[in-house]
Length: 481
Image 1 (spheres, helix red, strand yellow):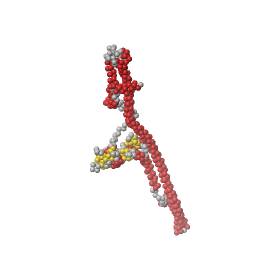
Image 2: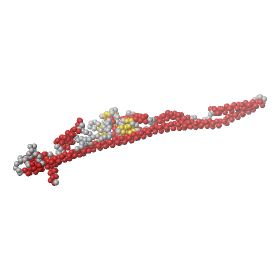
Image 3: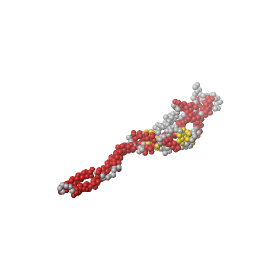
Image 4: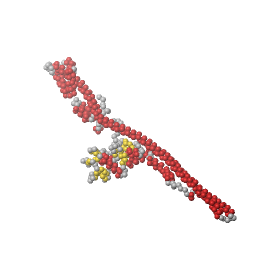
């Protein structure tokens, strides 16, 4: 019979012994052989062979504490410890759980061994308050990272929070599957992720832009918005002063000429008429100067508005350059973020596929571990049935041979039952008919010897259950054949 030990676990000694006890057809010698064979197949130390499936996922070693549960409530200390909080105590006067000596929560139940239990939301609220009290609040990792424009940078893989490839310790995971971690830890992971990915972040893009253009834009805008209102002052107008000097000079010349002309007409003496004529010449030129004022005012106003337009044009030009520079820097940063997000997305898909595969393998492993004993029992039963069949076939042949031998003996005994001398050897013809060989001394056995041999065969048949059963079945077959 072919061995099956390469396909299933070897049955343990107890199982074999139970099969021996349940099946009375096993002789003591066969049972001993089976037990000896079993012991020979066991490795040193008494360990039984085990069955494993190739390609199964390795079991993760959990470093977090197992959370005890009682009446739907969770163990407070274990959850706090798993959230990174160690200095957990008890205030017997207030009946509250303390952290660093401060009351943080009231448990819902206390077990007989003194373990405090509370619902998970209450414990998580205490954890949140503890970290807020220390200026380092917990944040929902995925939403917090996404708010930085880094979508898909936060992933959950094999029970660990990963941000840009950096593992971040998790305080707890709420009922919605949101992982909460300390903000400083998340910020640190984001900073390393940006540094490794060449991402500066929107604020950094703006800060760099502001350092180059912010001051210049503010100065240009201040020049436009805070410029003094236009007004005209002849004293401060160079053009008016130039005209004033020219008209005054020409007026004085005209004045002198007119006065000299009138003096010549009067014999060299001045007169009031001469003064009047000279003054009229001066007034004429002064009036010409005054007539220039509206034109000069308009020119001043035009210059003021022209300068304003130049300032606005300079500001618009500066804004255009700055906006273009910012857009390029922002887009380059966005491209880096998008590339990173795309990589994170495919990494997320890969991690998800790997996690799903591992879960599938673990499920198949559990199913295999459940089905393995059943299959082993089926194989053992099949092996046992095969052994029993082969053994019974041997016993059947043996029973047939014994039955035929007993029938031949019975025919000889029937023939000689009335001979009166049971110590008389049988004839050669009867011995040949019954298939009875000669004895060692060359003579044929006597009736007494045949009777003893028949009794021994009869005892062997009925002493052994299988032989007796097969003999009975054979007798029935012969009876109804």
